Length: 188
Image (cartoon, rainbow, N blue to C red; front, side, top):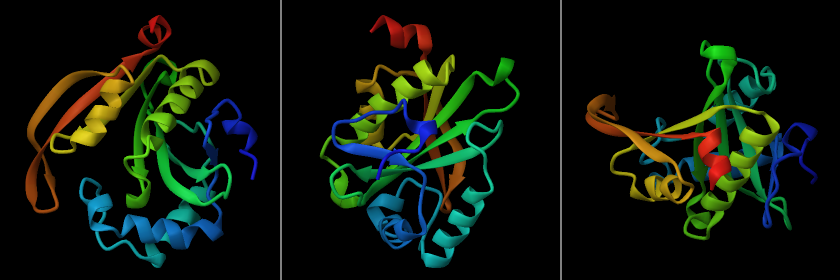
């Protein structure tokens, strides 16, 4: 399947970036229900009802709408099988909405294969070059070393360490805030 025009600026050797289809929902619910995948995420016991509600909510969104969290399916370019998903949060209220927040989730079977870095490279090029955004941020659980490593390999800098700032799954958790400016990205 070809990527939708709005994601045409994103390219990858092994991956295609596209909107979700209903056919993706069983795989989506399956990997989001994996304990290791859900460990640093806001959900637990993800099921098909949750996947369907997610899909219905996404259908009502317009890509780039200020304040929205727009999920993008990440699929294998050869098979179109869902590998994971990423989200772009179009932060509302800053100067001309020039800042976005990123999130990334990969199915357990697709972790450790370089897909996270490949996705991040594609997202950065798309957001800075095609969407012309000025700044990208990402929040990471302080215990999620693989996510922090991907951001650091993508030249994000750690701007903050929030200590026990969030009640997460019944415990106080700490988070890192990472950021990358367009000028920093272009200097690489």
